[in-house]
Image 1 (cartoon, rainbow, N blue to C red):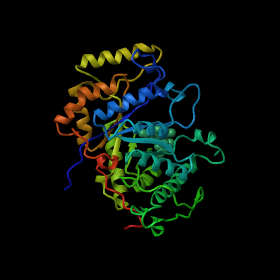
Image 2 (cartoon, protein in one colour):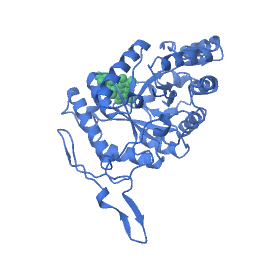
Image 3 (cartoon, rainbow, N blue to C red):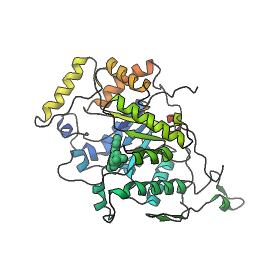
Image 4 (tube, helix red, strand yellow):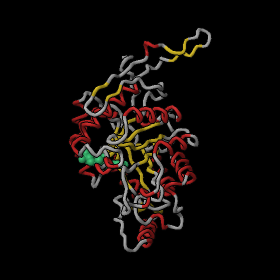
Length: 375
Ligand SMILES: Cc1cc2nc3c(=O)[nH]c(=O)nc-3n(C[C@H](O)[C@H](O)[C@H](O)COP(=O)(O)O)c2cc1C
């Protein structure tokens, strides 16, 4: 039997926070969601913590009632391109919805981020909420179109990423040979939603192509993810639900002829950690006091560092979480986790002490994807 991969950890940098009151906190810059300095500081900190990837979530349409972070935030690929220049090993994962963008543009943006970062790009492909249809001139479509569209979108993006075989570019000044046209492949895709000839004008990155995550819950989601994703981002109200998702996905991934060992279940948690239970409680109360009309539920993973490490280990060992996606509820959330919990997880041998690789695929322990034309 194959040895279980170590736990993987990602961090969602979501500016002022994924809540309504975070921006009030004295330690939180009120413009954090669009502050390059804030993102750089957090990215460097997550890399010090040996996290696998930064993982940015996104939104496709907004209104005045939304959380402050969504009201004024960076576009994912742009900010991650900037962060790639101040980091070396951590992955850079952006969320882009398949319901609105064009697959040629996304294939190109993500492949460029992958080259700029030397093989560290990831893409979280979501359908997103139907509300976004109105922002992207797709009002003729409905919710029922979103998954059939996503399927075509992914087939096209993956196809475009195989436009050039790994050794297509020779760039030999002496012989005057720039590339081998036999290793360039057009796609000529004709679908119900998209029509794309290709090829894409960028070569393979060091990790072959960006890592694909997908987020959702439905059966249509699972069918597409089991064929086209390296990992899924799932909701996790409790461990039992996460285990049930895992079993169902395992069944579907194996039906696709793939190994479930190379498929990462990603679960988001927003732990509040203290040196002691009491310190964690104080941090929680501090948040509650910032905006008395708004209450956040106590995070499921909560308490002293030792207790938080136990809970994480429990999820990981139960097979309910391969990749912990950390979101900070309190402005000191990443620091507390990195200073107090990461050393315990390292001591227990669950989490790395050093990066194994400097590609995202390498750190996640995912195989190199062979170009379909090279096999
Ligand atoms: C864990 C999780 C994370 C998600 N993250 C995003 C996101 O960052 N941006 C977005 O527009 N939609 C996001 N979605 C919404 C999904 O793309 C999808 O629209 C929604 O889950 C409905 O599809 P479903 O019926 O398959 O769950 C997320 C969904 C889940 C379950």
